[in-house]
Length: 480
Length: 102
Ligand SMILES: Cc1cc2nc3c(=O)[nH]c(=O)nc-3n(C[C@H](O)[C@@H](O)[C@H](O)COP(=O)(O)OP(=O)(O)OC[C@H]3O[C@@H](n4cnc5c(N)ncnc54)[C@H](O)[C@@H]3O)c2cc1C
Ligand code: FES
Image (tube, rainbow over all chains, first blue to last red):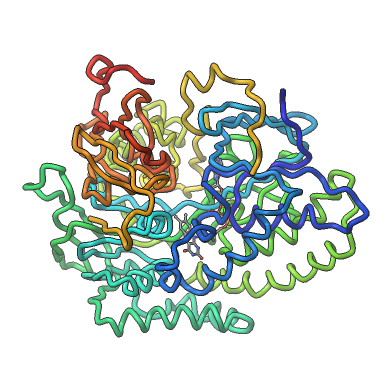
């Protein structure tokens, strides 16, 4: 039997959780809509509050006050009996229909279908791909990956490591590493030491209402300086080299260039980060129009002011809609609820409308903060000048040089590049390489990156086994 | 490579390439292997180069590992369980050598 709900939300991060809670917390008199929240993680919290609901106390101080303070409201939302939660559940197909959408889901080998009148994509961000020569060497990981290991499994690096890249998460994670006693060999910043000239005006504009986050950023920077970690700025090129003696082929050294000079660091672990971008895989798969965001240099779903996409039954919010950060993701959930309820013929309660207004007020300074962060941490030089020997497509081992070769043959966009070279046809289905392929093609042909398009997404959206497929039509698992 | 801040509270035993290893029930297989110092979980199907976990959130598929009886799986999304038998994911899968699965 196909399970039916009014609203299905994919993603139980701050955006999805706060939206779900707002949708069911109208006044007592009206029956709330039926709401299902789907997430492939074990519990709610998303990327930022990953494992906050089950975190061991020994990590509490390392992960910080903000992480800890999310626990009570996440717990309250998770226990709300009016919300159906389906964790460890992935959406592998989404079919827009006239009256809503139909999702194909898999939960622990159980394949089932869910029909919803509205689908909300609250599926969050991914780290911006950072292609450089040798980045596929084991021992090169993203900072988000190492932080996930810390939050989820209580693991920290047990060897000196190098941090490489730019963005607020670099400073946050450096602080978390130092606090857990990890030795940071060096920080290689792809950006400059101080504020960029282009960021000053945005900095002054962001200051009112943002003392706390800006002060926190300053503090993390100071902590890094006080720890006497060697820091290098304006790193313009990097090359990761495997250790020739290591049978596992792990990392041995990192070469980097500042100005005209190359330097070498012997290291077995490099953590890379260049900000986050919306994960548009689901939106693209649903046929929602995407738009190129010049300021954040990435694709995002095209939305109206309420969050509705070009497919009227599909909405999106949080960092999957546009990078605005975790606090904004939470307020966006509150702000979206009235319009979404109205689209289904529900009358939003007075309390709902008042909370929506408060959320709009809270979002204004966060928008100014984001403008500053975008200006200070644009995609970094070292990862934008992609050398010919860099594997832009790691799955199919296709180099930037190969992409430049087909650019010379007149390849007109990323989808044609796929037919030319198999780029984006590996298991990651182009999640990692789409933007880099477009960047290389654009550079070679002197076109804007947005003109090269994005990969058409194919089914299934997540790997499913033939066994799973044959078991289609299972009933919905018990929620919770 | 990585160490645990505290000992597993619910330890499980599993195997990688015949070597017995300990992990924490429910943590990802990738986390359990990294804690055991194993980073090259597969060989590239294209250039046979060693590959290991990169994003840890299910996006990059660099962490593919071979689970006996199940086949190819993302180690960062699959929980560690008692008795799992894991193999390094081959560059070009040879179903004969790997006893089926999907
Ligand atoms: C690895 C990583 C680490 C980060 N760490 C921090 C941090 O420490 N501090 C900070 O301020 N910001 C961090 N961020 C930024 C992050 O984007 C936050 O701003 C915040 O988590 C955004 O909230 P959200 O609700 O929009 O999405 P998220 O919190 O990302 O939640 C999205 C949820 O959707 C689920 N999902 C996605 N696709 C599917 C699918 N197909 N099927 C089922 N479920 C799906 C995911 O499992 C996830 O739980 C991080 C981002 C990443 C990628
Ligand atoms: S490490 Fe990227 S998918 Fe598992």
